[in-house]
Image 1 (spheres, rainbow over the protein chains, first blue to last red):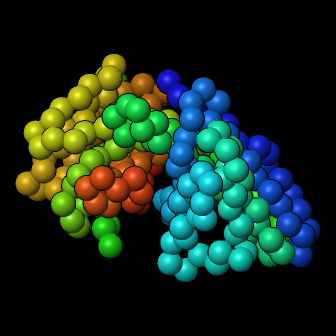
Image 2 (cartoon, chains in turn brown, red):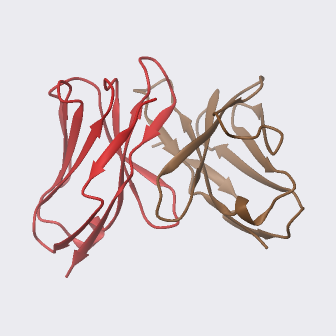
Length: 116
Length: 112
């Protein structure tokens, strides 16, 4: 099956710094990738839809200036959490849809961000 | 916006027993996905249902879609410790839409 990787798997940063998370589709091209965040014991909440070569579409309530998304190639999307604060600590998961098949969406292993 | 409610929220089952998890949508279902998640890890795709009445099986897991009821069920037969985890249903928010809305999740614990 299609494989999606994320890097790093976990990161600890100080408040006020920025953190970049990478999401890669390893064996397929993904024109669209999605970014989710998940708080402990809660479900996944879609943050934004990342489209290759164009601006990301953010969900209501998600600050686009704080969560910068770049989809520079068909296999890579990045999420940068700018000026991170402790409330940004969460589990961030990306996904990509293999459009050539039956709309299966494959998820990365997630990145746990802790802001101190 | 579409909302998905899963029941039960948590389930503790003795190994070898059968169990069912339900996912009910507040709107029409265009595509229903089932995923499994280990705590702190990514999601593992289990199966996808598109048509009313559709039923799919993989090993000991069977999922059904009741389009009229806007509901899907996930049934595990003869549960094993490896089935433990969080089960999430996800749905396409509209026809042809790629964005998924996820259910509240069901935490499954298997007692040996």
